[in-house]
Image (tube, rainbow, N blue to C red):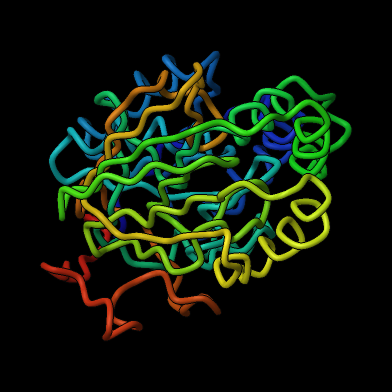
Length: 323
């Protein structure tokens, strides 16, 4: 029999969607024979408290929310030995769930909790805080801030709205990064620098299309200076397919850690929320948290076993959900 489930619900996620579907989700999980208790969060700090207490009691922590709360809970659970995280998409973007192949249909996602298996996945880290998706700064800082302030009725369109609004007032910045390894410094003028633990952000934008969740590395993507017109017509549409990395103004590197600074202040965002102020150090933490995966593989493999040329240094073994 599977361990009991603590369903942590962010009632505000997805413009209130998570709160509305929570009763159905609870019934569906119980229908699979799982012992379920539900908790609603007041804020991210409260979500962390609930997750820590549930994991300490041996419960599987299942988050019904968007990427922001999922990242915060993952950050908490990585400090609790044996903790397991289940994910039910309830936000506007749901990018981490999408990369893992977890359905956005609540009933199908509940089936993953009941029948899936847990395996260790990497997280990124900024200033001691973990994130599960992509951390970025520069143009993305402005776009994230605008998206977070946008009305809830925009739904998943909020990210495109944020990008278009940010573009109107954007002026290029000069960034400096130091990759570790190999200890190499690079300076460029342009739009943004992103650090992919996972592949996607912004509601389906494949900003780091080759990022893997078990290789102990970050996919570092920089976007150099181009005109606003070309950014809008050439680069932005390609991000949804991940083909922007083929453009000469986009450079991709891999590193365990990166120091990043800029010639003017920027807030770094990760999983849709602010996580630090430049300059910062961003690093990968391998196998930091156990996450329940669906039995089937996603269309874009998220693990090194599907990419022999990018095999992880220490591939984690698949682990069953704690009994």
